[in-house]
Image (tube, rainbow, N blue to C red; front, side):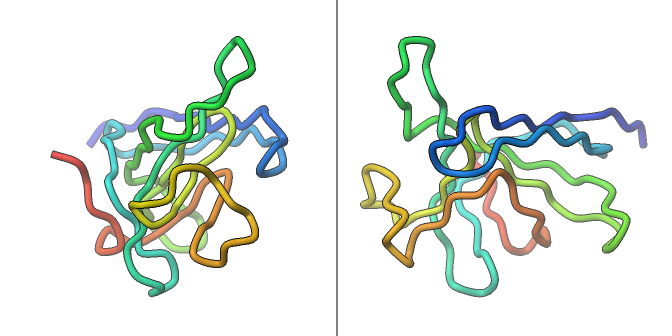
Length: 119
């Protein structure tokens, strides 16, 4: 199995703190549809992408791939765009940090069984 490195970079501080982290990926990234974070039930995964004109694309693709995680062996890395990863109910149209049903993170590490990949 060949490995490569993947860098997750969030450079927009609107929703999360900016980060730049590198992971050793074990497979190419694939689009992810939903994530069940901490057993709270599946939420639609979307990338938050700040466009060059400053507007926000709140429905950009989210991605997932298996990575080596020193604490857990192999985990699935789920990440979004340059403004973060948004996990929310399907009907949500924009991030609402006051809504407990929504989560915005720079990335999450989960088990394979916690995600549904897009076809």
